[in-house]
Length: 405
Ligand code: 5CA
Ligand code: ZN
Image 1 (cartoon, rainbow, N blue to C red):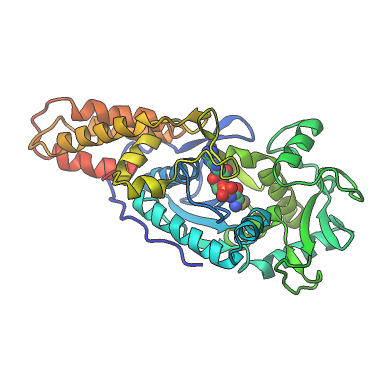
Image 2 (image 1 turned 90 degrees about the vertical axis):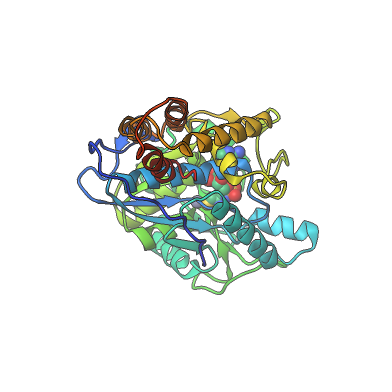
């Protein structure tokens, strides 16, 4: 599937070579990426295109844009894959409810997402892959699971058996009761009769009347959700990936299930060396979500004339590893801050920029502490200095590492 246009990312003079570390949700520790290699692979779960991009989505994709910028600055090359869940229950339900063709709905929302990502200057994935176009790989993966005795049939549907790998549970470390509750809330069917374990998840859903279906050796049907990401990641990035990313609502069941399915297919664990998550962004006291409708849409803000760089700056002022709530006033504050930065960078002279670049690198390489990076720029733009080269160097560093122009 067509991706979007990436912003250009300036290259800065090399620095001290500190390692890039991320907060790994699976171990609760800081994990170094690409310690012994110059290439890093990253798979980030993409949208289900039934509604427009809200600030929670934007925070998630911005997090991985930041990670990519930090890795590039550290001299790594990044191979980045993102999916689009362009056939799944929420999309079909929305299309049904509004009487729109589901493919038209998906195409429109994917295009809006591309436009939002470009406006926010988010680096595009190298491969942007829809579930529909990946059906052959998904079917092969399900067949592979069957051959390994890790899949079984329930009334024509194919299920993954979570007991097929000891690694199941190693991403979320939840107890069975918590897993059952979350599975029911997040698209699973723990109460369905005929399953061997309530947590077993759908791999291939047999064709239902009025629903899209594809012919396959599993019979006509459509893919389950978790195998979509496992199959796409394995095809494009190989057996073990460096980073599996998304919002933290995906830790269970989505990333747990994908990792378990991949582990059975490859015989290797862990599936990802680091699981990096954006904690949930809330609004009006609840998680911002399409299903609840408490949304602040990137496209609405853009249409109202807000500078996308102010949206980006507002989001950057929050750490990714704790849930936070968006307040409308933050946009005013971010717009003011952007004006202050731009004024500071338009000065004929400024303070020596080396310390700024070092502070940005230290903040971001040590677990993507974006608020600390923002604070470093605040300090630089409000300090006087005599270096005539400094504003240009600082502007490049802010562009390269924070994506703010
Ligand atoms: N298509 C699947 C992933 S394979 C999906 O979860 N799509 S989504 O459209 O529901 O969400 C897209 C991404 O945004 C996911 O990574 C999700 O975890 C993240 N996300 C959704 N809501 C929020 C929120 N309120 N705050 C932060 N991230 C969010
Ligand atoms: Zn996914």
